[in-house]
Image (cartoon, rainbow, N blue to C red; front, side, top):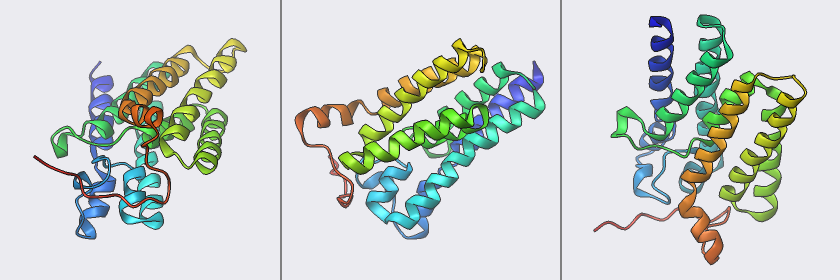
Length: 206
């Protein structure tokens, strides 16, 4: 129980490292004041550009990877991996270091999934890239990529190729991704969602 709690708390703290915000601060920009106000790689892309976004994407994915690898070697159970993955996502979305603000959890979710089921993660990521490239909507690609990963993981579990805990992880992570994009869904439906290539604007206050 102590080891389980330590892994979960450690995973949350790892996930809480605000990678995108740190990159922005190094360039004199507070991501929370631009675009969506989120600290994930999508807002880094709009605000700081492609290179910074690539670094943020890798860093955010590594948070999920490290958390699940830690759980695998310390706890050695699918349930432990699932809990660590959830904790890392929670840390990324609601970081204790920045007053419980953060990103939408996409990259960190994928990072954890890459350790659990690399084929599913790679397929979901490929769907994300294709949808985002064709539609130019990162939000749409993120949601459809997550949902496609759920469908594929369901097939793996049905074929007894993956534990049920990994399906629960993907299902909850995908549902959370959709929930975190609820404002984007409203803009997609109204036709006002920002497309790739559009610069992040300073957020209005007051």
